[in-house]
Length: 393
Image (cartoon, rainbow, N blue to C red; front, top):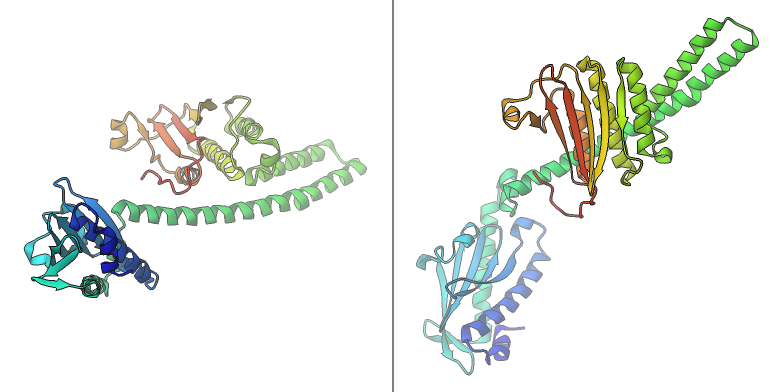
């Protein structure tokens, strides 16, 4: 639809400039839609927006990532400017006289006619003038982005710094999840191989020894090997997680840890837990497993506690010990000895938490002081994260 046709439809409006802005909005929207469909580079894409300034000025803004046309309507005139896109937020101060490319003045209210430099313009001429401004902005944008370094292209494309960081974080999460998935496949395969082949051969050996009435010590040794192999299989891949659920496996993990740690590992957990996807349950199990491994390696503790609580929509798992502990950073100490960074050996815990956070909002805290033990707290909001909802940075 041409501008003059649109002007005829809007001539009954109270202010002539309002009718013209409405017509130009439809004109540029159609032009931008056609243009964007032919351009792959998002840096060159254009958008159309209508705004009203507190001083009463009404504007139409047609912008790329670099440059913008601002069409300002007031009383009996409409002014068109070309300004840097970065200065849109400073309107009207950025609409300098030197940036004014076109001024339209009312010639006949009833007919919706306009003049440029005292010359009445037709609808076709109005189209040509607006297309000229459009082409000018496209040309300026192409000139600016040619040869632009990739980091600047990201920022120029309309990303905020937070958006750039979030894109990089998303890429990292996807890579970590892929690596974790590959690790779990390998561990599952290894656990099956040990369980189905090695453990099977051990059981055959035991039956052979029984048939030959071999000595009791040898039987005990084979039993010990069998138990150890089952524990290794369970550590490699908790095959019963889907069938038994998270609570029984965590309880079994604590019982096993009591033997390895040489100290009690108390487990407290409500009978009913929130229902999580299998990958989230696996991450929770692995976090508990890694925490207990760290206790065994570094803590020299006399008591360990694994406590799980559910408070409304919050799942909380706390794993604490009374061992050696470690020093946190000075900034963490200023926060009362609580940090999300942790110490050495906590990378797996943090990465697993980040992967949970892709599905449910989650965070992990580390509390520790030398000779005062360590406490790791995993918090998961059981309200499923909406698709597209941004994560806190």
